[in-house]
Image (tube, rainbow, N blue to C red; front, side, top):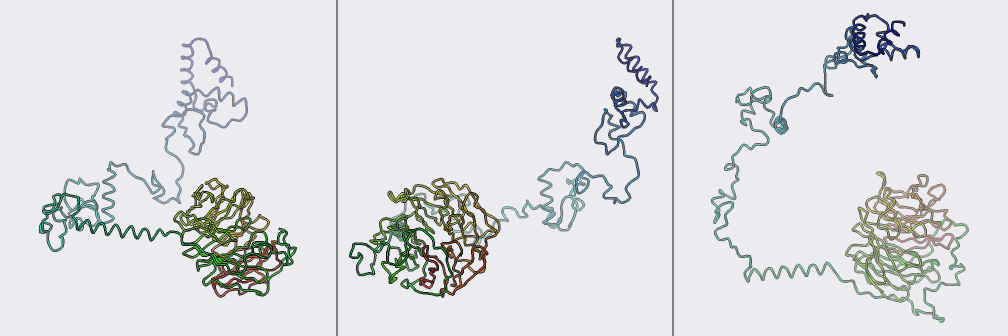
Length: 581
């Protein structure tokens, strides 16, 4: 200890020359086994020893001592507290070898697969030889001078190399003259009036103007094309209507739109029945459509009228109470009608058909007020349910867009273009401030009204297309008919999450857009299926309670009457609409 303190005192003396001489003599006199000289290499034991070791570790002295004493660094050491030399850092490791290492594992390596020696090879040449070897089975030997042409210059299939004269995959064996194929029975030079690859034919004309005969042919072709184009862009079909009742107005001047007061139910109130019951039997059949029925819609609020559209291109209005007659037929589409939608009051409705037209009709007079088209097929159509936006409609189109029209001007005022497939459904949620759309791209998107960017996008790898969506009476849930034969329930507020506890199974709907509906008291879920059956599930337990054979073909839609305890209306591809109680 005294020797260490004296060396520190002498290290801090005034004269530089004395410092140099003392330091030199101290280096020479240091004993290799002196504990203070190697204190920086040993673990520290106390604070006093730590301070002295730190003060005693001069870089030059430590390096020299380490080299002279032959002290090597531990390979597992994480931190070095002094400046070792290169020889110390890269000295060979001592100790027993691992007997369990194979020769390959013990060999030095600089990459995962082994040791790669640096070589100057052009990237193109390397790739050329690699492909040649994989295709022909031979390649140039890199260790031999390639200027000497012999069999020793190749590795692999040497015979093939000699046969192909060492050609690579990027070289062709035939010369350009040999490479030209013969053209239809002779060489290119034997073709009549052929003067060469860049020369013109002997009788070739430079004038672009056609002759009189050629001009006549061109005019005929152009006229045919224009005529064909006109056929494709058909004008909207002529609209007409048929009234099926004797008197359109009663003795008080009221039309069939007036809500009846003698049916024993207050149809004007929006109160739901206290308790709903399972329908058991068929009580009426509305027949009048000659082909399958696509969709049915009840009159808003009251539900005393039923609107139906069909593949026979017609739309019919029926009575739900009383004699249950067909009141009026609307004719105006040239192809099958896919979707219909009432406005809030029921005085007007929209129809979308495969003739690429959306038409606005007057429910009372049967007059077609206007029509809209963007030359694409509309798959679904909806009025905006807000009272101050009844002049706006949205339609899901076959060209992946949701198009918004203004009825007053007939112009497109907005396009929602984010889907990757045809848009199948549009459902308004959250007090009509938002709407949900589903598409053939197997996704569900949520939009703010009039903002053409979806703020919520739901698409999972396990999801299927959902071509039918219904909002629950309390506005909290969306029932989505999935193409994997189950009904999925999404929350219709805030986060739009999938409710995994509510999955309704047991029916077969793959390939069909069978409409789902809720009972007014939210106790049952009803849906048709591909076998023509009406399926009824319990909302709380998701158990399949009841199944009725309703139609001979696909039962495409099922509606629970909003003011009845057990009345369900179904329609199918057999052309019939049935009432169950």
